[in-house]
Each structure stands twice: as structure tokens, then as C-alpha cells.
Image (cartoon, rainbow, N blue to C red):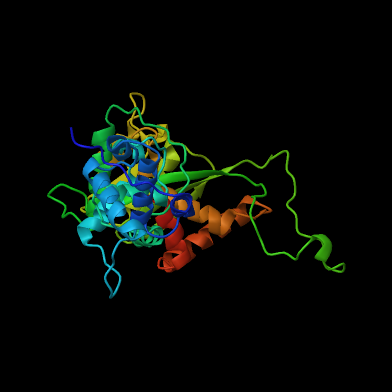
Length: 377
């Protein structure tokens, strides 16, 4: 029987040096992995078990132990060549991005999320890259548009036609983005429509510039602005009917006192008037009851058939597929936060002026950054 591969006898100083390399958490991932293998072998762990713990092959563990026995600590450090830093190929970058966006459990690892250390360690163990530092991995992910984000709750759609509805909406988006040429009978114009509200006459939370308070405050400064408290709202509500023309990147909005089928059709007729009747139009919207044709009320379907319009409904609990949602977030951020309007007329005027500003400044970096971060479809 062949003798079991094991690291040579190491003294106390060498053991402490191995511990420092492992606990430091900086530097090369390759050095950290090799030091871990050597220390586990010094603790009496067999090669097969070390390979299982470090998520690598037994042959790799044997090579590391043999090299350490022959060359000492020099064998732990990879031998880099001079010159400019290594650039990863496009397939390598795609694979790194794919693995970073996946869950560790999908690869058989007992972790709930990736850290830079775990991800870099796994990439080297799987042979995706020969070596990558934590900082290099962070920069690469940032260049690929991947960041470490907080996970939000998600309501799963139980719509039996989920796949078909989602595919149709995505196909319409591809037409609007110019990625697909519409066939005969398909729409040339695509709108995203939804209602925003209710718009109450109430103070909205937000932030604004103000002087410092506390010990360093100016004794002669004016009192810090505060929002009034409201416990009753007797002035009713309003609703914003809004639509985004994906081709022109233009936002349209009408403020209505009620949100019903009649008001919805009024706004749809306005959208239809923006283009000649022979141009087929598609409107992406959710399955809110006034948007649907029912047994008792067929006005929506009758109008769509007579007006050369297609209604593409998003699946249940999948309003995130509607690109208008990101525009509502921008509207709230730019216009409604930290406001306390005296009347619905003032509030509606500000919203209309924001829509005018937004359509003139579609390239505004703050607006595009906010919308891009929120939009997922």
C-alpha cells in the first residue's frame, strides 16, 4: 500500500505563519487556499477530506503538499510574470458574472450568499480562472454591472398564463427597442400604461437642506422646518393616468378625480389620437378591473377592436414588468417627496410641470440612473 501523502513536520513558528496567512484575508486567493491545505494536512486530515473541505480535487491537494515539503513557504505563493495585469477574456468574464448572480446552494455549497472571498475561492477551485484577487473581482463585477444588493420580498405570480403573457410583453418591448422587426399585423407603437395614486392632500416625507442642530447650532438661526401633522383628509383624492411611449421615450399624464372604466377609456382615446388610426398600437397594462372586458361591460374590448389597439396584460402580481412603474418612482422622488400642497390644483400643476420637464430632459443623468436602477423589464 502506498504511503499516505502528508505534510512534513512543521514547528510552532511555521504553524503561526500559516495561521496568519489564513486569517489575514487579503492578498492572493491561491496563497490562502494553499496555506489552508497545508495547515489541514499538518492537523492530520487526510487528502480526500482536505479536497472535500476546500472544494478542490485530491490531486491538487497532493501537489500543494509535495511542493511545500520540497520548497517550503515559497511554494505557497504563485509565480506571477511581469508586465501589465492580466485581462480576463470575454468568456471568463461572462462565466464569473453568471456564477456571481447565482446562489451558492445551486453549486452544492452550504452558503446563503456569495462574499468576495467565497466567490473568488470558488472560481479558482472550479478552474474558471487561475487566480483573482478580491479587489480585482470587485472591480470586474462593477464593470459588468453587478453589485452587492439587499434582497427584497417578492410575490410569486400564480397566473396560469404567466409564461404566455410575459413572453408577449417582452416581445412588444423588443419591438419598441428596435431589437425585433414587427411582422404584418403586429403593433408599431407600444405604450406602457398605469394609474398612480391616490394623490392625497397630505405632507409627504422627504429631505431638504437645513442648518445643523444640537450643540453646534447657531442660536440665532430660524427654527428647523417641520411637516404639519394631518389626521383627517376631507378633500378627497385624485388619480394620475400615465402612459410611456417607448419609441419616443415620452411620458403622458392626465389627472382624474376617479379611477374607473370611463376615465380609463377617455385616456386611451387620447393616446389613440396621437397617431394615425391605420398605425396599430399596443398598450401594456395590468389586469385592474376597469382595464378588462367583462360579461356585463364590453366597452374596453369593443373600443380596442374598433381602434386598431392591442391590450397586452401583465401576469397577476407582476406589475414590475410594466416599465411605467420606474417612471412613477422618479415622479415621487423628484416632485412629491417633502411637499405639502395647499390644494389638489397646486399638486396637479406641479405634476404636469414635472412631466413637461421630464420629456425635455430624458438624458438627465440623475433621472436615467434612477429609472435604470428600478427598471427590470
